[in-house]
Image 1 (tube, rainbow, N blue to C red):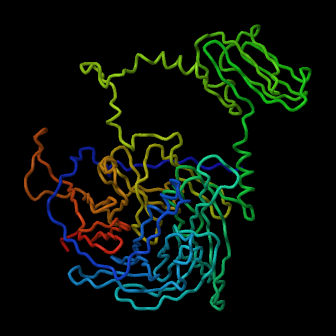
Image 2 (image 1 turned 90 degrees about the vertical axis):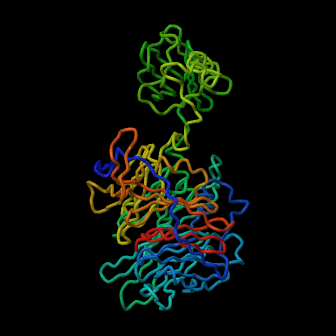
Image 3 (image 1 turned 135 degrees about the horizontal axis):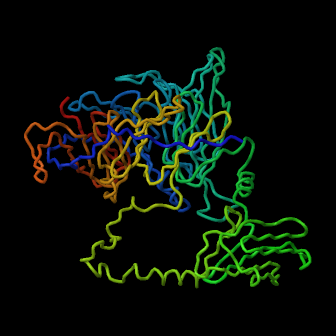
Length: 582
């Protein structure tokens, strides 16, 4: 069986600035333009049965404003009338009203369990659209460009089951066969496994093709499904359609064709099956508990104690054997069959007080059960390292850590996020990057012909990575750095959306209401400025700017282009001019 390659992200040191001074607040006003919408945005609020964190991440924090990365400064949204509305900006001082480019054929309000409608701009002339009820549309738009008035024509329209949102799509042309690959996300009810939230995340890879020029009809030619437990931070196809990359907190895996969720659960349960044995320890001894088959007698059991080894035979079959973590007193070790049909083995430690991290060296078949008395003893031994006072001795050479100084991003989960690459043919994981403490921040399309970039926190900085599927040795390229932005964004407790310009000239984030923060890349100073601490001249300064929108409506959408920021609320679309030099 092929094993996925463990890879790492290579940081380009020349793109880092260890002497970055920080952001200077600029009070320069930013030109802001407001457009009132003819109809409210088609916002779909979470229902009572959508109560998990995954529902909030996927649907509650959904970005209702969509940027057409193939055409500059062109954004779209869907309103309550089922209309796809477009605003393409040529001149800020001569803004027109958003215009209708397409209207959904069905009335969406009659569907009780619908999700937010979603759209993805697949290519220069193709769009994929979900109405939020479980129906997928493939639309030929013609060239959408400036002042384009071509009619959007539905080329494919089919019900695909439970409601979903579109994550990503690409257009492919191979041997005169045109196809569209689309990635759909659903959160499904868990029927078998009662642990956790009661839901799981499903990603469906749907390929829609037209065989040749003479064949006019598009039809589904391939459907593959991945299952996971968390909503992915990032998921995108490779440009050639040969692979898929996913950044997620917990890994996804493909479900074989024709295999339903129940079969998948059985397969997964084999990987996460019940432990072979349970064990716990005190200062003096260890206890091993094994569930026995019914009607097992004393004659069916053979337990051999050696100073450093143990061997257990059940019904003539070797059940467990291996080297113990430390030595035991074999003469004082015993075993007994309990009334609940379990075998309890008592092992006396030779070195009292030594905590064993594992029972048998290298064995992962058992599960350790913490004993409350043992935990209390450990806590008592560590008591001298703690204090009930916040800082009992401020003059200490090494003062204790103040937990109030920790940020959300300083908290490490037991399982860190990972970046996985899946092969489209074998459906196997080929590359894995353990992201560790590199917190995911946002994604951005720098070049629509390439995969979307993703931004990760590295120490205090935010680093932008461009995937290159064709470069097997260097699949992820570090292309830009936003100095100290990883640290700065952690202080924004109410942040909702995060974005950056495709040319990396600035990054921006918005809160749930009103405020937008802009962080520009360092630029040369026009006046002389000195660092008072070091007495040296400062050559460039990075500016921070804050814009406050004149509205009380929540922010529903947020997109950044090289020239402008677009902010969507329920009833208004705001344009913030970022690059005022042009």
